[in-house]
Length: 201
Image 1: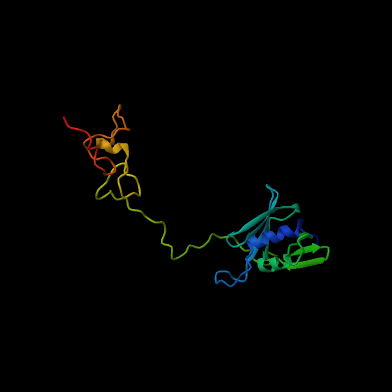
Image 2: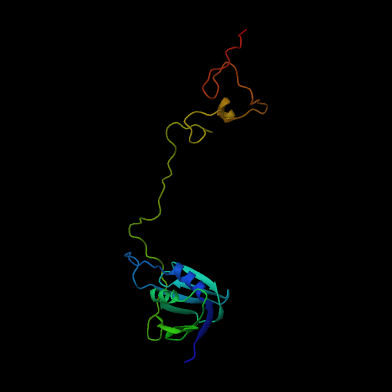
C-alpha cells in the first residue's frame, strides 16, 4: 500500500515539538494517560503542526518538506516515547498510511496505529468545558461617590501635596497667576504657616 503522505524532518525538531505539546507527567488527575495529538499540515503556510487533539490546548509548528494529509491522529504518549529514542542529529521520515504512521531512519522503521484509521471514529476538537466553580464575569455596580471627595487630589498620598490648583477655588487657574509665589498671610499647601516676617501696615 502506498503512503498518503511523506515528510522529512530532523529528529531534534520533533523532540522539541513533542516536549511542548505532550506532557511527560501524567500523575495529575486531569491528565489522563491517553493524550491524543494531531499531525496537521497547513498548506497555505507550508508548515507542519503538532497539536493536542481534544481542545488544541498546546501546539507547535515546524517547517516541512514533502506532502501530508489534512490530519493524522496518534497516541501522544507513545509518539513522544518513540521520538525521544532517536539521536538529535538523525533525520527521520514520517510516512502516513490510512491505518498507521511509519517512522523511518537509518537504523530501521517503526509503525504505530492511527486513532483516525478506517473503522475508528476520529477525535473532534471541542472547546474547553466551563469550570462549574466559575460564576461568570464579575459585575461591578456603578455607585456614586460617597463621603468627602477632593478634586485633583494626588492618588495614594495621605498628606496634601503642593499642587498649584489648590490655591484657587474650584481648581481654576487665573490667566496671569504666578505659581512660583506663595500667598502671604495664609497657610501654604503642605501645612506650614505663612511667612511671619511680613509686617502689617
